[in-house]
Image (cartoon, rainbow, N blue to C red; front, side):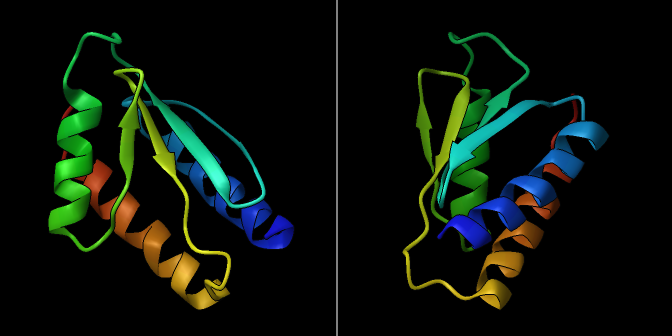
Length: 96
């Protein structure tokens, strides 16, 4: 979990650097979150989670502008990188 969490946060940080829609990535092990660059009252995180689900990845919006990712501890590195790809594809589809 620790090794895969580092991989996940590294890949997510690349997206934070690339997309203005993402503000911050944080976490420990495989329990991670990304902060959306919007207000807590916005529905942006919810809309992203809906689109993620449509693209095959479940995530949970929390506190309005935060998306929590909690993959199973048995996830493989290849599966984790597939999830990162889904997240990137989904974020690219949003304009911000």
